[in-house]
Length: 415
Ligand SMILES: *Cc1c(COP(=O)(O)O)cnc(C)c1O
Image (cartoon, rainbow, N blue to C red; front, side, top):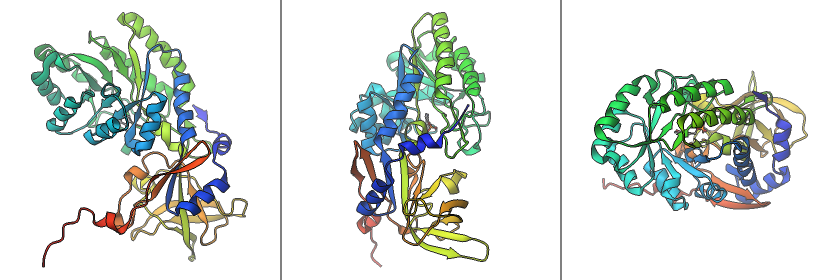
């Protein structure tokens, strides 16, 4: 574990003037992504696992599915991790080859799985009955991967911890015998084993424990080509936050992996599927302060957004650091930053922020992952525009919605 270093973060912060300019040019609320930061994070992973001969990073695109971000990672040589047929289709549209796309669904219909098979991507199965049906239909003609649940506890947040005993994800490690029986009877070919234990792994040790369980399971399969350790890397949100020490993980897991391959008698590919790690810190959400409201107990800064645009604080108490772009050296004062949705809609409680005036622009950090993609039109508001900063230039990568967008699929009845 390593203390995060917000000063490093600050160094990468795009020029405040540039962000102010972008807010002025495109209006608020606005998502801004820094391409170089995404590339940086990708390169870090490659570096951390440089001791592994066959390494494959698959960007988990549910974190942010803007087509341009998919294309950016494709340019870098990344693969793609998807959880729905629509994400698979977006990936193909972005130019990924089918064999570079992994599809790891949970609880989807067998019709969808068959359609995805037609697209030729790698499929990870996480359910015994699906495994059995797939095996009966396709036997050894279409190799698959299996998602194993190693029953390790990811970390802090229970809503995003998916590897524990009560989780709906994966086939339990304790059901290996059943998996093997299905494979024997149907002739299925298993080329990959996979685990993904949630998004909040605090500790390298927990990861290594999961790896050991996966290696243990891997000894039961003869035709493996790869082992996929999923993701769960923790990123820092505020000063003092712990984050996954990717270099330490690279060193320790790399060694374990090498030992395992020696024992297995084959150079397997090591796969990761990071989402948050690659894009979270690249994103900034900019919102305008509509009103500053003093009540008997506190001061509210009310912005032109709400949980319709950024749901993470309301959904699972995520912390997003908030700064005042318009008055960066003003006196620090305490604020509750809230949205305009007609429910309680709190982005941040008791935050120390440089003095806020109406019409100031606030900046929310870590807005690259699970932010825009979870936005909605609740309260009949438009979803924000998205801008990519790339080589010092700003590029509009998604237009702000209009009234027409709200009505697009509405079918009017006659009364
Ligand atoms: C969501 C997801 C990921 C990415 O998780 P992060 O915490 O964003 O890195 C990876 N693999 C699978 C199967 C997922 O569902």
